[in-house]
Image (cartoon, rainbow, N blue to C red):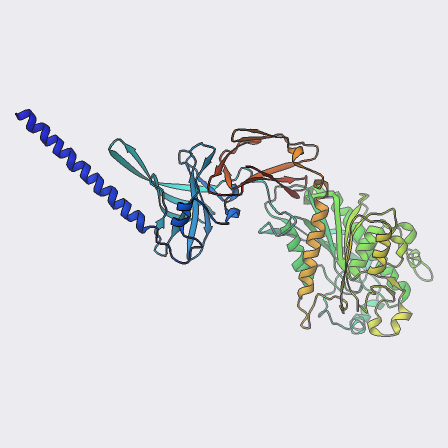
Length: 572
């Protein structure tokens, strides 16, 4: 009898315990129903989407690049934050080592409460840290028979990338946050009047400027230091970058390597991934046809000296000497074109000397004694010209991007004298120039592989400034066109690459890659509609999201300078 009473007590105790468990479960179920209430700030209703097992068109968020994983490898959760504002929502999944899994949405309300429908793992809090990682508090629930244990633990979630070196969209946009600039590097020396003269603005009167400098022009010339500034991206993994030499304008009389244009353009190009040099060069002349020709030639000699210096120090400044580009405005554009196209036969006659004038020497006989050779692959010609159109020869295939206003009275877009804005006197003091339209007719006739002329209707000289001398919308258009043009050159050797060059092999949910190193310097793999859950090089495990419709691999292929091309491989 006593034994029966004891057994009855045990049964009763167990019944009470089970009742408590049931009440607890019902309570949790009630809370779960409440969690389905979503504010209007969220772009979809979590409960409806879970019931239909569908997620809307947010596929750009559902890729490996956007997921974070715990540093603790025992934690199977991966998560992504789709919005970081007053209303925060995101997604997570549990890596259960299967081929596919369900993507689970969550929502954080204005009080910091997190709502989602997953019983075994509860996200209690998410805090973004200064380094871009997340501190996430997770409760893990485990059930054994009638018992359920809970364990809270804080995790540091880091980005789920398998190749930190890869920089997507390099050369297409400002992918680097910071840049380094080294000022006033001496690349040579030469005899002249001056090497920089900061004018008062884009609308300065030439005659007034010459009048202000008249005393210096009658004095003897002196030996001048030739200086440049070099810009390049900070924390770059590429050790050989394309070089862009920028040359300021100013009618070979005024200008400075640190003018407003250069102060904006050079840092921009460095943040896009280039090594950039902005140079000063010799300026100043007593107005006459021969003197203007001579100072233009001296500017070319200085630019060639600067380029020889850069090639000689290519390792120091991270320069790929097979990808040399040059650009400039006005006189700087004229010098850029001369740098790319002028051969000894086109040296102006006045440079050889004459009555009371000494010979200026050959193309590479000034500035410094360096002997390095170079080959300019592209010119960005902003309202420039050449003195002889025959320089644009079939023996050259230099990529040409030109921008020119069709109302330019300072440097002609067709064939005319420069400086016509000052009147008839310009016809006596200058020789005629062949402007951008003539240059591109010649380039087109000779089938240059890359040439584009942009004509700005009613555009005068330097059409990048407004009435208040501020950079205008034309400047930003030019910046975009220049970016696209040079990026296409950077990735030329990637154009013929296909998926076959990656030698892809599939085994269940594993993908193995053996890239053809003859044509692919490196690659980076991303998955859309799924996530890569292993970081073994050339051997990747993928888990796909069952409730996301579009699924594919993205292969970002790079060449030796980091330019990249994207190939897609869709999966069923």
